[in-house]
Length: 213
Length: 79
Image 1: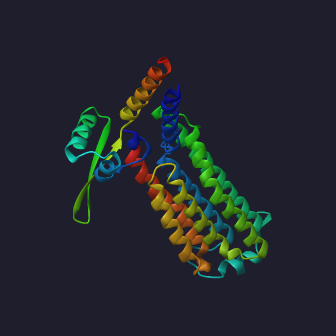
Image 2: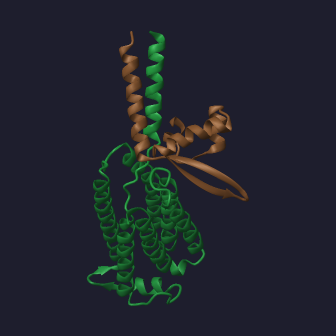
């Protein structure tokens, strides 16, 4: 009797191990492309609002922004709204393309593996988000862009264990970009546009052609 | 198969150590699995040494799950 239960236990154990190690593979490269495009649009909107061009140089933002009130709102409201809209659109398109992929592979969209992925992304992102709020609270506006890149990169490196591994390199690049941008605070927007825009489009396309074409 | 369903890729050396099989024995089992499309092979070079790794395929995972289910049935039915 005992041996029987022992065997059953072994089976349960290995099934549990299989479950725990399954990755969420429905992640679509197109969500990266879409996110990148929205990020670039968001960055372009900021340039328009500040009436400057990329690489204009350090401190242009701070000087220009402080005295600006365009479109009926001050610059902080505009930036936050801009970032918020980009985030929502990126997430929405991410979910859209990934759901499409899951359906194509006849896999479930919301299962243990996707839940695991979300939780493990949420932890670094949440920490980063709160940290950035802290930065804003103390007025270290220039540090926000580098911080977002670094935390996002770390989140991707972590998430790569729970989904497609290609994200890992994206994460590493984002971290490096964020670290470099820490020393060039005046170019935060350019780094941000490159990290969230260009890199996502590039990686999105790589993953799309690798897995979905 | 148990090792392959819980790891992305496992190389020949690791399989051999964990399972305690001879080169030939392991190789022949792996060949059978591969010819049934249950696993796939990747040959790489680490430095200048060749390394072969194995990974489970979708059909392999499915077959293994069915195998586990069948084992469970047998165990449950034995008294």
